[in-house]
Image 1 (cartoon, rainbow, N blue to C red):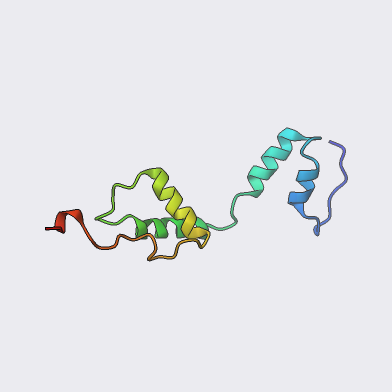
Image 2 (tube, rainbow, N blue to C red):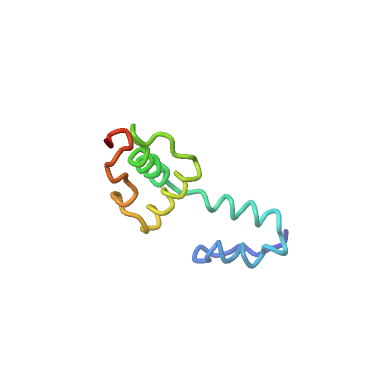
Length: 94
């Protein structure tokens, strides 16, 4: 690999995007590596939000439904109360 050293101000994602056809394997590895968050704050936040969604009354959500709710919350489409039950349980109806 005879490439010049890139400067500190280079956008590394754009660099690997421009080299993806020249070095497909290394480019793919670089994109995967660069996608790793620098901190665990995002993953901890997901667990916290997941704990808000999965409650004692709501413990049978399928993994795909939980994933959809987590994504919608993360994207700002749903706020905390939007995905909660209305409070009417079928067991409590007369």
